[in-house]
Length: 116
Image (cartoon, rainbow, N blue to C red; front, side, top):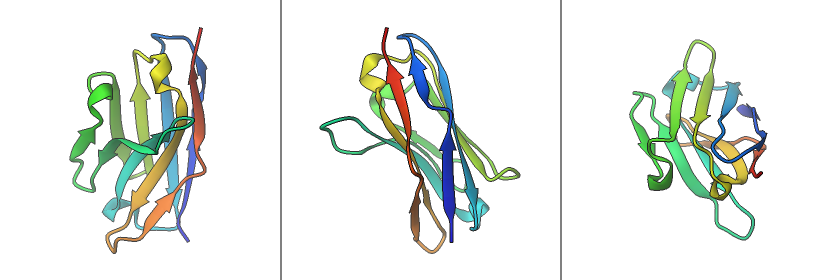
């Protein structure tokens, strides 16, 4: 049973920074594609950033240049570094994993609130 546990959310002022971490257990992390999604109130869940098992990355256009996704296979961890946060970034952020055999896993979510 794969488990994804997120941490690092919180309240930050506009222009501030936060780092989200997701630790995976119970699966083959090295052969999993990982991603961060977010879901704001009244909106559909959207893909924010992804990193493949070969470390190829993709980003939602509105976060390019502000967010960076990375992974540490030795620690089974994927990290989202967020800078220049704006109120529109306020959402619940979810860690997502897709295994080599196409099984998908979600974390429980962590709240990010950008407000003065």
